[in-house]
Image (cartoon, rainbow, N blue to C red; front, top):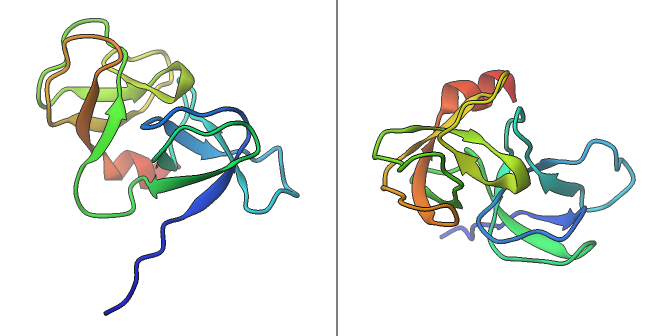
Length: 132
């Protein structure tokens, strides 16, 4: 039986749990590589597993990188229904509101009634791999 390694990175800033992050390409000499929140027009590389302070190691689930769903925090403009397309928002959250040049990176598989809810999502693999 093989052991599954959980990827860890260095936090470029304080990070909350269950948020979308991407590699910080401005920090080329940090090992392990730095991650920062994925912004509104970004493509996420991972989902944080826990909250950490700046420069701490953070465990992540690569996005997409495994079968199944991911638990993420959302900020909403209206109630999110099952099947709703989700886009990156500020501070690594996902939203149902599509900004200009934003990519639909996931689909909701649970409902969300309020900003700050944590819901299960599935990645939109075509967008994530094709543009990320």
